[in-house]
Length: 337
Image 1 (cartoon, rainbow, N blue to C red):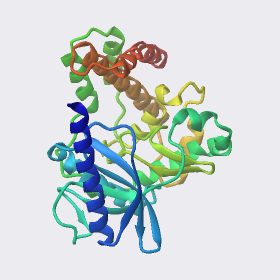
Image 2 (cartoon, one colour; image 1 turned 90 degrees about the vertical axis):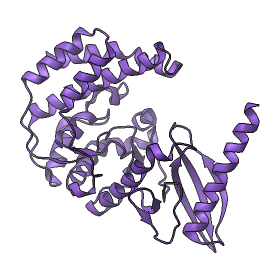
Image 3 (cartoon, rainbow, N blue to C red; image 1 turned 60 degrees about the vertical axis):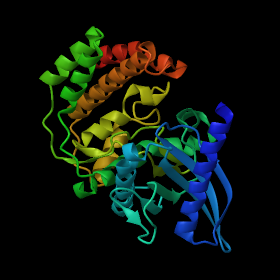
Image 4 (spheres, rainbow, N blue to C red; image 1 turned 135 degrees about the vertical axis):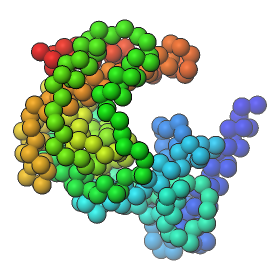
């Protein structure tokens, strides 16, 4: 019985894809190629080729999985607004061709329906181990840390009004402290890190748009360097150094000794960030946010393995992520000195 249900759902989604294309490009548009990309539980991502007369468009379509629209529609709309604001600020992002959701409907002629974002498909690599090892990206690797600094400076120039109208985020240290408490698992190294970070917290210089997940793996890279910044779902208002510190978390180095994404040094990142218009970066604050990022990722790893062990979602992948908790504990001890 499972196969007919799966086929039926796939047929419905495929019909939605074609309907969106006709709404955006007109009834004469066709879709000679479409392929669902892997990943995503509450959302689906499709690669599409659209023929509009003699013009061919290579696109990416993101839409809610069946039944998830109420849960994620607003976020899809917010992401489209953020990506447009990012492009205006000079951040390399895919161009949003059309979007629809709780907060946005472009073009306005599109009737109400499933939330989606339709954007240009940017060629390039996103898999970090290929970016860090393949000869095709050898020239790019020397430029990536500086390009990340430039992209982050542009992100932090974006107007706060581009963010969705949600209540101000609570203290991030308190937030993750509460998460660990709710899990109910003893982790003395994490306890030590929370206490040390609380005692050494730097003063926030300013409040900007923060991407929230700017790292190796969320960048499209070509032989010349960064082509696009992806995954804006976690964007929020906060201390801009949070983004720089997250990029330097050891987990995103993928085995490389270089501290910035596995491809560069702190000086490359910071000097390019400041030269591109970012405010001067206090190195102690950068280390604090890097340490916070390692702690945050460690707590996330605990969360993931508990989902597996407690039966919320039995998954080899979640169990494997849980095995990395000890790596984060070691990294924290090193950072805390």
